Image (spheres, rainbow, N blue to C red):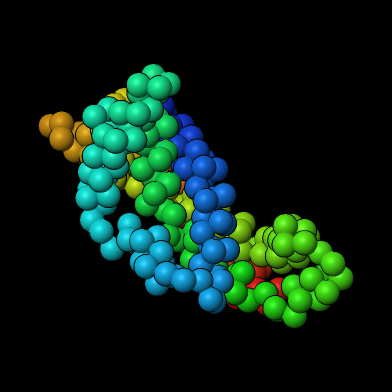
Length: 229
């Protein structure tokens, strides 16, 4: 498939943003899933609702909230700018952040299912042998939950490839910096005669999403076979 150089830039940027989003979100998703898997956690319904909020909010609203909080005049974004001269809005990192926020609920849910399927007796046995909580997490919980963590990463990556609303609201559509494939397709459709360009980009986007879904499905099947779901 023939793409123009600037269109290949959008493809590479999409893959880069998706990778950054998953790499940055996965540790947070693992921590939140571990916390939400605690049956006696006080305030768990509220935390669970907050974590899954991006799934039900319009993506544009999520992007606007990020803009309010992390913009140069926001409470967090303004502080980062004053202290470190660091800016997230309208940057590649900001695009990855917005993408990560949107995919966080999917990743948390997948990991949580894996954690909740672990036999509590194994953790009790490790505790009886003198293993500290961190040792139990690293030597028992994490290895048993590894297939779920991998599946969450694959699902998050596949979902990141198509994120649009939050990214365009928080990071805008800047070619070479924040214009991922969905944004490039939208930009092409705004130009008279851009349907052919949009069709080529949509085909690439379709192939990337299909590959991501196939990988995530293979990992989920593997997860079911080992009895983690």
